Length: 373
Image (tube, rainbow, N blue to C red):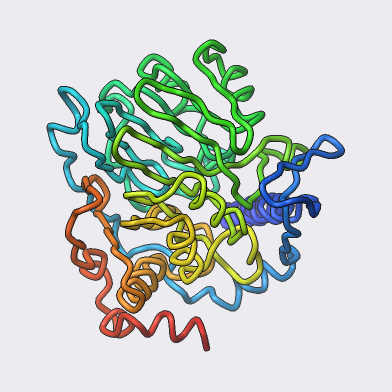
């Protein structure tokens, strides 16, 4: 009984931290510009978030929703040619879980938002725990040329993973302020590059561009929005990739498409959404729209299937995005954890349905219909 109360209390503390971060101050400005005032970064548009009371009420009302699969999802063994030998010249991406992906392009290997620990939390014994193991451990990863970081939240920036990667990565690219965290954790400052929105850096044959996102940052109760958040464009000699990071729908998507599109493949967040925080995460309909605005060719949804971070079913993002892509003629890939895809890959089967056999998944569109109702 005492243990249950302690766990519940820790859950409330974690929820309070999340809501405080969601409610970090915002300021209106000019599209495409980063606002900095009073020691904090600001979104271009105003962002809204529900109160802690409203969030806890939502959790209670939806307590019967299964936010984790019945059993841990299996991981597909990563292909041997992805792990050894030269990196592919052609663009291909291996999903390692959540927003962690291994990108190969123009003979280089890039890693996005590496989180390979058991929890995405400031606490080693509480907070969101993986229900899908990482497709690779740090030890199993090949040599990585560069890491791209979108922001400093625990499900995107993990100190233990970063420290373990220190000897395997040539360069770390991060939004303003995030690089300073890496240096504080012991990384060589010469290998850390911080970029503002619309700034770019040359890395071998690639051009890496930090582009706008609409989100928030912080890892404690007092550092909200003290570091910047961003999306990323990876511009190769012949192919291009867009990584959204965490974001709500914003006007910058169209600008990104105009300046740096079209993109052969987009990695778009799809998960952890709720009507109580409508401006800092996207509903699946918005994820599809964002892909179209940046002029994406093939879309790969990320930020789902790994952690319980919202009140929707664990598999709802995959079902809704699949139905919407079919309706709108969007080319989609939905790899299993550990699977490698390319822009021209054939759409994978709805593999997650094998782990859920209830009536909802017998009718894939019902999840979206229930949400709309």
